[in-house]
Amino acid sequence: MINPFDDTYFMKRALQEAETAFDKNEVPIGAVIVIKNQIIARAHNLTETLNDVTAHAEMQAFTAASDYLGGKYLRDCTLYVTLEPCQMCAGASYWTQIGKIVYGARDEHRGFKHYNTQLHPKTKVIGGILEFECSEIIKRFFIEKRNLN
Amino acid sequence: MINPFDDTYFMKRALQEAETAFDKNEVPIGAVIVIKNQIIARAHNLTETLNDVTAHAEMQAFTAASDYLGGKYLRDCTLYVTLEPCQMCAGASYWTQIGKIVYGARDEHRGFKHYNTQLHPKTKVIGGILEFECSEIIKRFFIEKRNLN
Image (cartoon, rainbow over all chains, first blue to last red; front, side, top):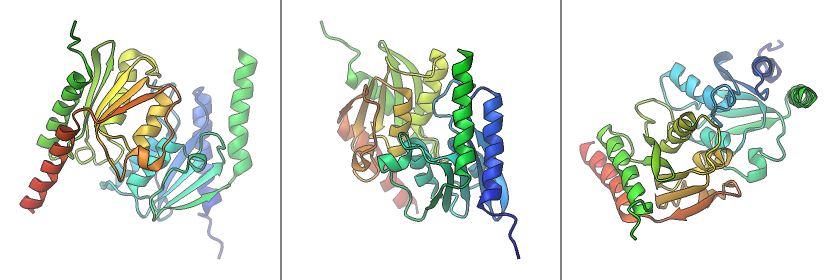
């Protein structure tokens, strides 16, 4: 039987969040957190709107998911995020003890892999799901921004 | 002339925040952010109260300081924090471009130095201000907790 709830399905939901960010003139990065095929948190980058460099999609999603579950830890959850998490977000994921991180596009300059940020030993990582789409929306954002200035 | 507003003065203010955390049954870590000798943000660890592992003193202080200044960046600010920041908080400080980080006690296992978290190239770091007091309050917290259980 085909499972309709695969990594691509949930990454598409994260991409919808990135589109929402795009429409708000935010760098378009989106995230969802999933437990047992159910989305329990949705978030997108809000650094400009909130005037807060810590308002990354992942940070908001961690807070929302903990709130939903009524527990601090996200051991049975998966984070889907359109861009490879940065040091801050990967560092936050360490504290959540999240079970799995699935990201779309690689961030070669600011991603946690470049900096060797330590994840929780129980956190699995998969990269490159809908990589083209996740990368493309960010490129499109900066091209449009450049053309407007 | 003696400057009353030295690193020890502001670390004492951060320690007061740690005491407030202690009274709330939170791991006692406190932080203040200062610009031109003025405290513009005070915060303490609230991970238990908010049920949120990202609610470290530093994260809240960054958000509050940006809100106060009306700008995302904290280039002319100094963060005083009683314990060496973790990967998440150090990673957040990178995005704030904060001018200086002053911490009290070293965190040998979870601190950013152990993990080589990359700070912003313009961020200066000083450690060991009121180290004994900052470390002592955390030890006292865990001793009391152990005796209660």
